[in-house]
Image: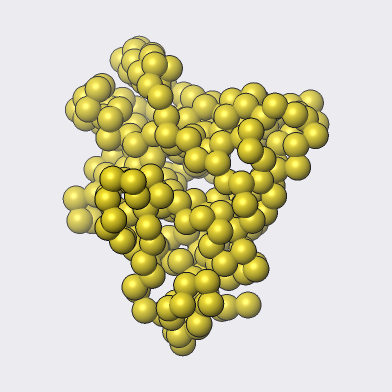
Length: 258
């Protein structure tokens, strides 16, 4: 297994390129029919907020695959590799999405939106696929354009429950000083509006999301990998048709993509 930050070049036969060199070239599956441009995962993330990599080195362990694509991030209180599988709501705790929605649709959201600084990226990697379940995504730039950047920046929220015995006020749209980046956070479960203005903005966001068609990606084959910019792209899950679904997706948060 590769150590995080390992500097030596490692040959991965499925890439036929050294992992160390930041030159892993991918075909963007969403635009391949329209363009023959070959792009790196980082370039795809910068362009559209996500990168889908079909059957990426399926024999690699999740942590090794993540280290080949960037820098995994150990988040306090969570396992480095989190296994996600469909679970009925009465079989898990209410502080999870499965506990709230069971086998139903997971609404579009930002992972750990109630944290002061949510993880920048996340990797979803298929261990066992289900052709009837998809990951759904929406580029938040369309939401910002529809609702307004100033409106979202003025909308203050708080976590559903205290974080470290206090409530931190968190804007929906947060401008960061580093390279003029911005972070959008949204979660209809774990964020609460702090005043009437925020309540009205929440309604506007929910109305927009309810009438917008997300992009769907099915992680079906072992090794199918989806990288998401968690500061930009909202994501969710389609309903799972069968309670006996064997779908298993490994999630790893990441601080950097190569």
